[in-house]
Structure formats: C-alpha cells, structure tokens
Length: 95
Image (cartoon, rainbow, N blue to C red; front, side, top):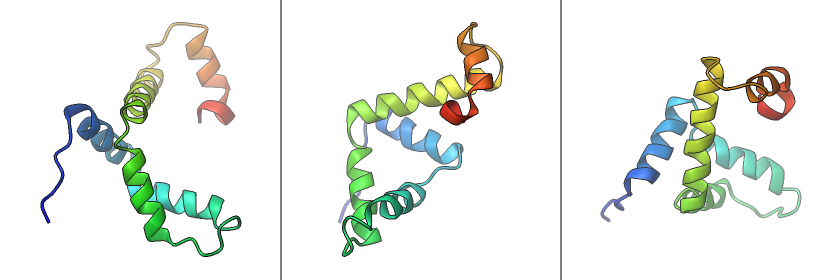
C-alpha cells in the first residue's frame, strides 16, 4: 500500500502537533476515554483511524495551525492586550 499524499497545510498541521508533543495516539486515547462508556465495544484502533480522518479535513487543519500560532505568539508575549492578558490569566480555557 502506498502512502497517501498530503497537501502542505495538512502536513504542517500534523508536524506542528508533533512538535508541540501531541500525537494521533494521544488524541485517540482521549477519544476512547471519552466515548467508551457510550460505546462499550469501541476499539482504540477505530479511534486512531477516525482521528486520522478528521485531521484530513481542511477546517480542522486551519484550526490547528491557527491555534498553534496563537499559542506560540502568546508564549512570546507578542499578542495585543486584552487577548494576551486573557490568555495569560485564563489557564482553564487556554491552558
């Protein structure tokens, strides 16, 4: 089986997730944890497959790269107030 070609945005979104310490396995485990009580026969491999499919969606890729860029800028204190202050103070939402 040949590897599927990814467009530039999808590749960047996936690469940045990994650079930030987030893997498909990590996301799949969270999905499994949150859904297994509603779907007792759920398998982790199904979660991984579906996370992979969701990451193929352009809207998701755009949200990932936007969120990561905001995260990077916030860490460097480069956002304008009030956004910088909100992010600094609101660990529960932006943590």
